[in-house]
Image 1 (cartoon, one colour):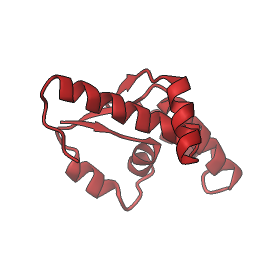
Image 2 (tube, rainbow, N blue to C red):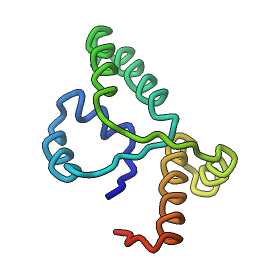
Image 3 (spheres, helix red, strand yellow):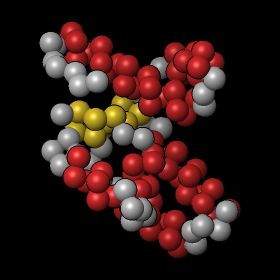
Length: 118
């Protein structure tokens, strides 16, 4: 099963957040998919944690390394369409990238007659 995953999922796993166990339980055989901006967003989130002093520099660098061990397929998204989505729903463009990715995957799945869980 393909699952669109966002930055929070990766950070929860590598930073040993309480949600980690549940995330691993519900995604054992899943194909993780994310927009190609994921590594940049992870870096941005970790740098913000350093600024807020919730992580040390070494913890952030180690966490970023750990994200590379999580298999994920990065896919291109249409920035223009994502921006339009962000404007329409008054959300951040980074969030819209994930929705655009999910929308694209849903469209392909329908064309291939693949069952979609909603």
